[in-house]
Image (tube, rainbow, N blue to C red; front, side, top):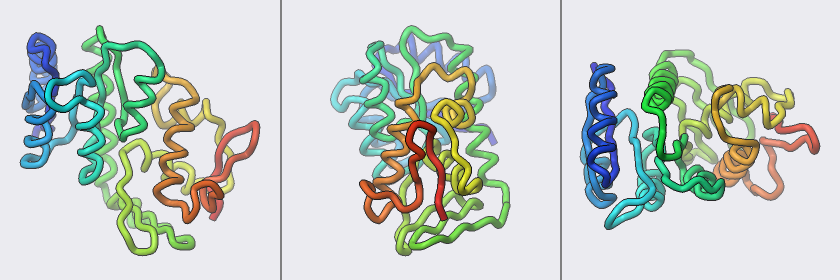
Length: 227
């Protein structure tokens, strides 16, 4: 079955270009031209990935991303016409899995879409692996995380980061290494991307995020998971 992608951008020529490129690769494409319509479509349909512009009429892309993250882990790639680092980090802060700055290379977008969907598909393969430590339970089969028996909503990148650290408990990973493993060697972001994701993970899984129990910092080196 073809993967289903929602493209959200008020520039119809950009949507048309993405649709053509993605349908050529066998993806099924839906389109929305404002944030309000996008939210309605995401509520009523199942998507494998959302390509979401930041600047949208009615409801902006950041708010759409934040709202979606309250109920869904669908991967989100943000598109932004702004080049400032804070805009990019802001997108990740509210739960985006990746971002691209306009104008972008359609081949690079296709590569990122393919990689994200491949990772999501691979995560569905049975592994029968579960880690339980303290109040934290990580089900590597279903990519579900619970704290004190309550489900925790993680983005795809947040889970990837947690899985890598928890499967290699005690091993310290530098920010550069985490960026390379989780985001890929071609990812244009910097170490702040890792810091943002670690902070968001701590807020979601730690009993007290300011005094983390699981994701520890090795000052001057990087991060590690402590069982």
